[in-house]
Amino acid sequence: MSKALFISEQTLLDNSIVNENVSYTMIRPTLIKVQEMRIQPIVGSPLYNQIKAQIIASTVSALNQTLLEDYIQPALVQWLQFELPMVLAFSH
Image (tube, rainbow, N blue to C red; front, side, top):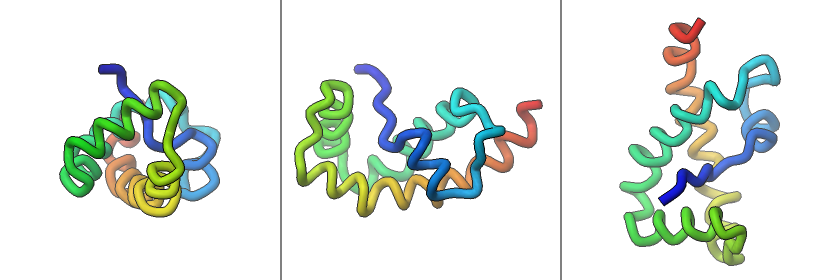
């Protein structure tokens, strides 16, 4: 299955210390890792896969949209702020 990103670049920029000087393509692998390692175990594989499929199909249900916006995306911002400094420090 394709890789679905649970947070948009703009949402990340608006809610974190990450700014426009950091390429989203550099963040993407870490974002996918954080989704798989931190979010999937919490929500469970069936719900995680359902959300991924809905994102890919652009048909996110109202309940899953609320889950994404109110819980998953804020958690992703925090986890990315934790993971990214090490990744970005060695990418240049």
